[in-house]
Image (cartoon, rainbow, N blue to C red):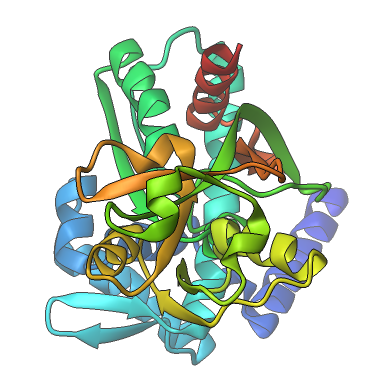
Length: 313
């Protein structure tokens, strides 16, 4: 009896200590509600996706904010955007619930992938869509969110847990990452059919000296590779027109603003352009499928990387 009283007293002390430092104010339900809203971008969308009521989700998030005196979302009409604190917390909850999913998959001895939502960041749709198609064929219940940006932004999104997996042309030596080499691509130039270099079809890199170029924004691998090669050979273009997207580069080249650069696999067929092969430089770049090491065993991530490995072989 005395031992039970001692344990009860210690329990009361522990609970009082937890209440004092505020840890009991944070519940798994509150964190899950916050995570659902951060993922969906609005309370109504989170309610539809989770089957929970919107007032329930709103109440949980509000309770979490009030308990810690923080502001987690900026409300803008029907949509919400995480504040800086909310963005950081979303990174934590992404890892938390990914580990929970991993533990559940381990305990269930998961054999087949049937459903789920995979967030993908890529620097081009060309290399990632075949992997998505293979996954969809394997499990028709999967859904995807694909964002396209330059390699620097893609890597940042992966490291910030804003994407589950990534596909990008960037050499990686970061121990936090696991990468599968998909294929090797080569940089080529392209210009309007009437351009002097386009009529040749082949040219040394030195021919770009004094030429007007149309390139992606800094952070793009195509620009990085070409500029490094030109700098090493002391080749200086007359000017560089910077355009944010591949489509924008193509339209600017078509309008006569200069010579563009693109990976050979992405040029496609367009009668407005002629491919120009660089004869004295092997501007080869590898494309990788990438995930965080800590998330390799999460079911959806593992399935994506498995399909990437299979397609690369």
